[in-house]
Amino acid sequence: MGVDLYLRKMTLIVIIAIIASFSIRTFGTVFPQIFKNIFIVKATILINVLFILSHLLFWLVFYREYISTTKVTLKKTCVLAIIGSFAVSFIYMKKLPFVFDTILHFPLFIMNPFFDAVVPLMSSAFHLIFFVTFKKSLELDENTRLSKPILSIIIGISIYTFLHLLVLFNFLATGRFEWLEHMPRIVAVSTVPLIIVAVFLILSFYYRFYKFLDSGYKIENESAS
Image (tube, rainbow, N blue to C red; front, side):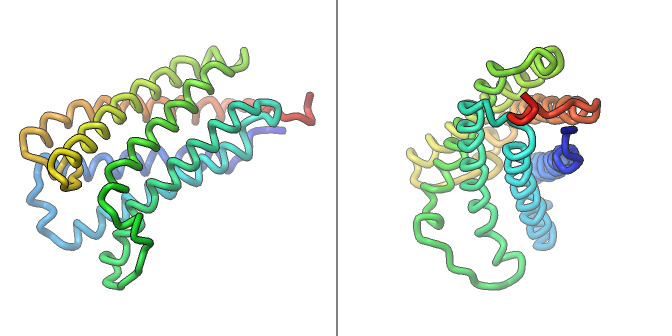
């Protein structure tokens, strides 16, 4: 069975969403005055929501369409990646009422700032576990084209894990939750190069994976064996 066209489309959507989300957040870190405009704030929230939802949908499609049913360990670690993306989505979704000027009540544990500080770190750890497992389970035809891109995203996610640790440590030290761009100016600006490197490495994987799928790779499944 050929790779489902939907998976290729989802990969492309994730690439576009990452670029859009990263660009506006980086520009806002360097020029924070743009967020004095309420419409830009709302647009940023919507872009970030679309990014995390497209990322979650990608993992659901990846789990269903790409991973062989014989690769039990890889499927289990993919479930971790799905859980991580699903949990992070609440951080962005709870900002939607502000965009549409409505009131929506979320469970108290989701509204707790500790949730915002811990969940992104947990999600990064889950994704790291998946990609390390993915790299170890590559088939011969996958290995030649995906080994380096997977190593690239492992490094990129590792950088993000470090940055999420900084956010958590700041929360534990101050009792306030702040994204990096909202921290003191020297911290916000000095972490931008790390974020750029991380995003480039992550995008490199998705782009190479998209090209790999576009080459007509055949999905290995249990019935084909």
